[in-house]
Length: 131
Image (cartoon, rainbow, N blue to C red):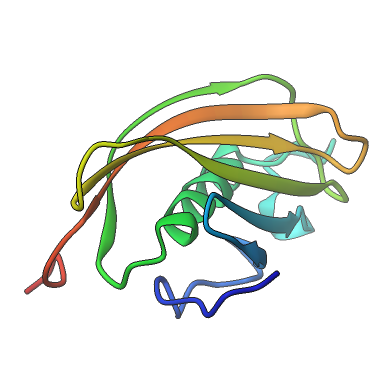
């Protein structure tokens, strides 16, 4: 199921991922690791792309126009390489109030092997963070 996306509308599918599903309690975003993400000749991808995917999944789950990341506690479990297809699944750990939420995100590769997990503290602001 894909609800209407209300946040991060200009996010790059190429570098951050493509939204697969937005549901009340879960969001799923997918990213293919491409050559431009590699940091060496063996095809190891930079962890920032995996982190960006997970962060994007958390933002999409909350799905409010002015949601931002305040804090993240993450763990990189396995390396990712060019050709991997990563899937991030975000779910609520705690909805503290209308402004603050704690989101859990798990990222697996195409073989369903967990490569990353994290807890993201997100804030839904009344106005844009740059206003």
